[in-house]
Image (cartoon, rainbow, N blue to C red; front, side, top):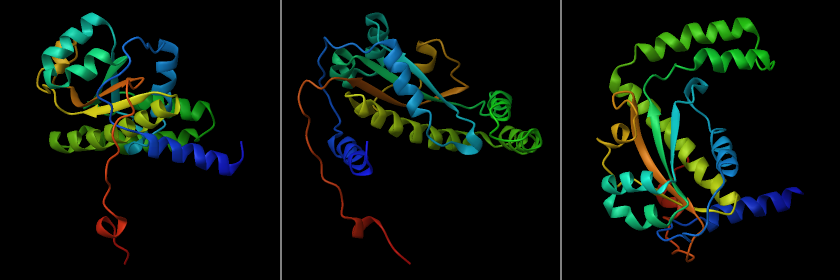
Length: 212
């Protein structure tokens, strides 16, 4: 594929994305393809590459019924989508640090001494952060992965809708997660749109950007 076609494809992805409320309920997404979408999403950047995002793929009828109690105002998205992905941030930010940097050494991305230096710097840094600073860090990283997830889904031919209207205080515990460790970021419904969705207005760049 040449560069012009690549650019056109990306332009189609970002300009064609819509927040969809109603999906074709007959469409399912295989676990293999969902894993591909999530894997592509996790190419997003994160602080020190700690990747503190966690995904809960809610697709069974039973799980959706549990979610409906927590997100009643998003019933259409929950009921008709192929799945709803709950994105969480892991406050134990460095829980996978050894695995991440160890694999980087194994693949030749960094030498052992760089790994040791990064671990010595990043692990104490995150462990000693105040809780609010930890929350801010994982929310930023999880926001980045969430946007990339929606673009990846679009590239696979699916539509999405990011949703914040749910009971954040109960969702972790409702699905068997540690509420004091995993903080909810957003819900993302995914599936095939039942209708095209509506376009939306964006402010002009001269209203939101400055050059100095």
